[in-house]
Length: 196
Image (cartoon, rainbow, N blue to C red; front, top):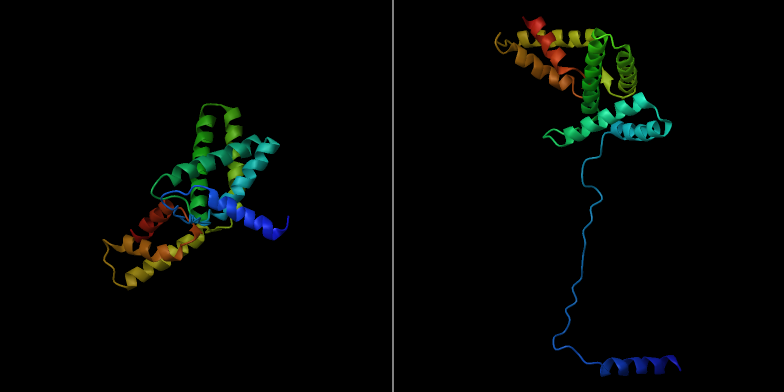
């Protein structure tokens, strides 16, 4: 059978089939997919996730405990109005976990629980390692104090009233400290000391 004959046979069969009363409307389906739904996670968070897998394989308990605590705190923060979007925010979260570990170690020491003290100290070492390798610039207390003194002098030179000098100094410092690892509570305490 030649190609021409097979085509004629196909058309004849097609015509002999009963047709529907209403023609079928062909609707083209178009799906819109997005490859970019949210902001990219902080690079440090990606590193922490990779390290979590490595710690699981190596059965490194202190590192695994620390990384799970960080991931849990990050997940909890993502459910609030201020999710963690930058490395600076993630470093602040790690500092918070570090402080709670230090408090737990102090309480365990007061209760003469050397096993718990050792466990917390191991976790603090891991946290310090991540803070040191975070890539976020940390300021020393001397550098921070110098910046605060400069801001206080600039605020006084601008003629700011004594009542609002603390707020003015904090405003001046907020731009300069953007993207740097600074404990805001310590900063506020230092500003109060130097303005008072």
